Image (cartoon, rainbow, N blue to C red; front, top):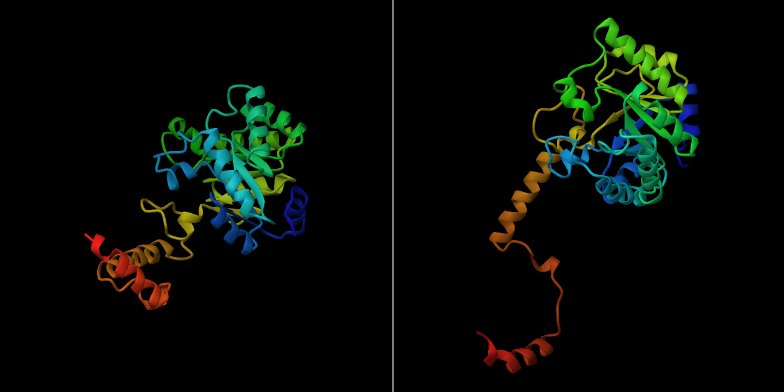
Amino acid sequence: MKNTVLTLLKQKQSGEKISMLTAYDYSTAKLVDEAEINTILVGDSLGMVMLGYESTLPVTMEDMISHTASVSRGAKNAFVIADMPFMSYQTNVEQAMDNAGRLMKEGNANAVKLEGGASVCNQIKAISQAGIPVVAHLGLTPQSVNAFGGFKVQGKSEADAEKIIQDALDIEKAGACMVVLECVPAKLATLITKLLTIPTIGIGAGNGCDGQVLVYHDMLGMYEGVAPKFAKKFAQIGQQMKQAFEEYDKQVKSTQFPDESHIFKIDEDIISSLENKYNGDAK
């Protein structure tokens, strides 16, 4: 059954947790969808894990549209959320509306996600009133990493915690259908979850949220580098892939691959005739 804004809201109301994973291409989206994950986030994290950038900031609208479209073709039941990249919505409401519309029309997304609280409420209100579901993102917002001075836990002081709470209330009032809480103290995330009627999705925010999201490269051990504390590895697929690549290289160079089971045959009379005909031309 197709996951929608209403089915996800019902999961919160019934206490059933919501699962979310990232995906950036058709093949991965198809696997995630077949695993019955509720929601797929086409995150601007693709800038780092797919395009090799050091942050999410260089990601363009064209990048997001292309990857979202491929994910949407692979996801039949998952609710597909597309990130709005850096500076695609911050300038003004009209810009935000245009780019959100592109992600829905050209990317075939089911919702768009943008970062920020009170500062983007006008954008959230306008986009949602146009019939486009909006997912908000509070706490550690990667597009603001330079303003934060790095990837740090947010909301640890009373003033900072209160700001996140107020932002959460404001974005819900503006029309957001869901909110991602990233790298905030677990008890703060639990409090926010109780205060909101819309679902909360945690990433480094504890299990008091209505659901969880991870970058699939992190949870499969595919992305080398410093792993976030919250990114539990459910498998070591990266190491298995590397070993398979090494074995392939070895077998190609030793002529073990391809063997008889991997080749197609031709009638011996035909190949003999061709060899006789062209043998003199062989160099």
